[in-house]
Length: 250
Image (cartoon, rainbow, N blue to C red):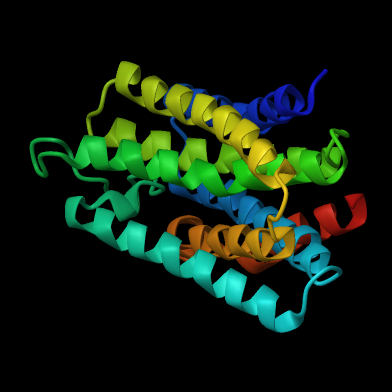
């Protein structure tokens, strides 16, 4: 299988957690506490992926100053785009609805489109990471632990967000369409990431750091608030369990 196709396949596998989480959020109708617990584990996994895999890998090829500048740039870009979406309350796109409600379309016209755009935005950093992993390995399979971590993190995202969408009165068709679109965008972005990282002259260490910064900003601004809202208990421990799981797996 060619490298770009392999990148797309693994992007699709990691993003499958989005659809699984969306279906769980629509069918199970979970309360905030279990959603927050799942989200906390996802927070730990994604922070581990950004630090243990991306940052540590980048430090092997570039200086700490380059890594720091890339990570800050990635976080800044994500935060600016997320701030732009705040106008339509789309920064609440990962809230389950019991603690903090997402706006309905009647309350905030255009919020549905903004939430969909924000969800697609969230899928891009991990897709670039997968593309880089395949390109860096010469078309080899990226670490399965990394794919599993992204898949679970995506499950947490889909679970909390779809619960909030449902509580805001959005239809099942809308919810599933958003996450199907995000799944396909992840696969396409992973293929584009592979082609980008395979080209000559790309400073992979800086771009990996950029993706790591974007992932950390995503976690802090969209997932962590859901995990800690209402002090559901043992949130820090659950996040550390997720972090330790990927540490041991890698």
